Structures are given as C-alpha cells and as structure tokens.
Length: 306
Image (tube, rainbow, N blue to C red; front, side, top):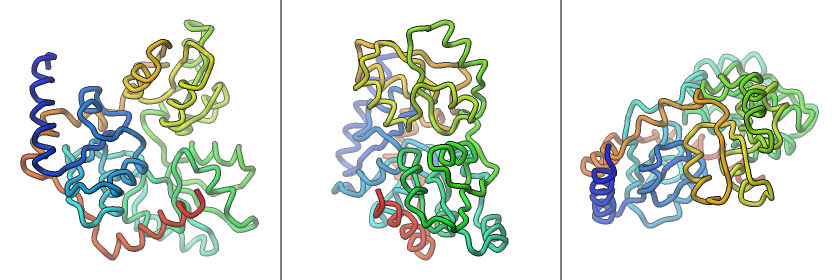
C-alpha cells in the first residue's frame, strides 16, 4: 500500500471513528500505519483499562482475540470489535478451560495464576491474573508454602521463579515468536552491535534472558530506552515495537535481534480491515456474563495488588 492510499484510508477511519463514537486501540506489535490511527497504543490489558475510562460506545481493538475479550470483560456496555476475527494468540490457545479444570483437580490446593494472554474462559477458572510487567510482584504477593500453578507461558514462569525464588508448576505453553529466539541469535547481534544494550521480553527462553541487559514488557522497553543514557539498543521482541521506539527516541538507534521476530497474527490487522470493522461494527467479540463475572474477579485481584 503506497503512502497516498495509507493517508486516504487513515483519514476515512478517523472521520468514521468520530461518527461511531469509537476508540481505536493498537498493541505495540501492530503495523505502523495501524498504530498511527489509534487513540491509544500499548500493552493489552493497559489498553482495555484506558478504553473502559472513555465515553466511547465502540472499541476497535487492533490486536488478537484474547485482548478484545479483556476489553469486553472490562467494558460490557460497549461494542467491542476485532478487525480480523482470525487474529488469535497461539500461546493463549495452548490452554483451555477443560484442560485447566483437569489440572486443577490434580492440584486442589494450588493457587492458579494466569498470564493475561489467555482466554476469558481460562481467566474464569483462575484465582489471579498477571501481566509481563507485574508478574513478579503478583507471585511475590502470594502466601508462601502454598503450591502455585502458572498458565500458560513456561518461559515467563521460569523468569518469575528466577526473580522470586518461588517454585511453580508451569504449563507447557510458550509464545511462538519469542521462543524461536536463540542465544546464537543474540551473540551474532551483539557482535554486530557491540555498543548496544540488549532488551528482551520475559516470554523469551531462559538462556536468552540470561544474556540480556534488561528484561521488560513492551511498555517497559520503551521506558528503559527513554531513560537510559545508552544511544544504541538491540531489541528482543516483536518487530512492531520499533515504530514507537523510533518515534519516542528519534536520536537513538534500535536493532531487532532477528527477522524471525514477527507475529503473523498481530500483522493480520490492516487499515482496510479497521475501516470495514468501523462500517459494519463486526466482527464483534463478547463474553457471556457468567464467564465475565468470574474472569473480572481474577483481573480485579491482580489490580488490588498492583
């Protein structure tokens, strides 16, 4: 899509957004042109919280399905649309409510903690949620001596255990995008950019995290880059983060560790799909009230701590 077409479509989206009284949310991993039409850009749960505090009647969530569900959980009175109904999160799909219920029966004494990268049905089966930014704090707050079941990201789970010293039973899930990053990729990138600091996401493998200068959520990476005296950074997360990093720190250099770090599901959302979702108010994402009530309790417990 050429720049003229992007601009014309963006203008149509911004005008239609006003007519619909809509708010557009975009995750940091979205295409640059999608980020540019968004009212809020950020991490998944933070975006849902921001949308809940607006007077908008419609939420257009440019992300993946579990994110739109979170928006629906927090804003049941608003219409929530996901521009591409097939934009899923493979890691979130690695655990479902039936599987989790079976595991809970094996561990009846366990506190069940879910990463926000899970479906509403899974959240409804959990005691408390966490994000990549507050996971360490959430786990550290739990009573000692009681077993913990953590779903679904084993890599994030390993990182939490290394920071808290708490033992947890980890679900065998992972992010396809982050998990494909290897120490060899890191070493090669460091050789190419010897002066750069390495920032990686906690969804990366433990052996990758061990090589990092800082481990952060996407929002944490942006904050670290802004506040650091360093002028050059190697980035160990999805390529979409480069757009806000370069906008917020135009005087600094950023290098993605590997071209493998592309989430195909995050890239499914296009400007054309955003436009059509505003015209039709479809595809809609809703959460049944019985599930929503239990899922929001899981999220509220986390918010009480953080």
